[in-house]
Length: 194
Image (cartoon, rainbow, N blue to C red; front, top):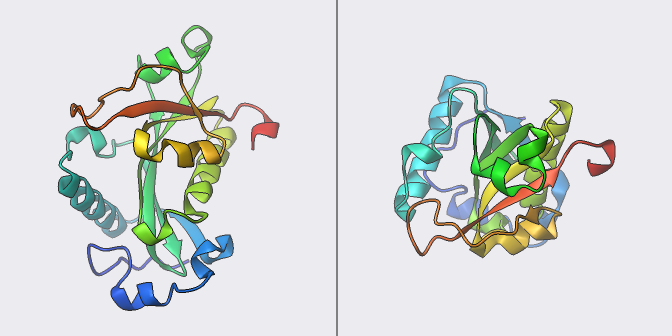
């Protein structure tokens, strides 16, 4: 896998986007997921995160990775296609309140956050690969659930890959009334869930 940082604030150049014509972007074998380990890659991750969230108007400390977060790049043929992070949920959280049975059971939760995909990859297998990798990481580390806050506009795509929305009124987690979020979860306790 390539560890080259992208050169611009877009996921692929115009020339590379032209190369995506056809079915190549729908073939899972063209994608890879790599955990970010170098300081340079972490800086690239933060640059992309800030660029996209500032443009949408909700960049805040809340969306930044914590010291115990693990960040990942999603690559399409070794070019940047997206990114995401995984963070252990500690202490009291809305996830423990809204994922059925978690409050009383003391569930271990792994949060999937900062899922950003280049526009040309949003209708292909990339989201499914992110969700699968997250579930495998959670299962291997003894977490009971992968959880996240999912924007209403992308909720149906998450559900298509087996993620369950918790039953609750929409949340405005970012403090903006037009950004409605739902807590979502996926059971990773048993072998059969992976």
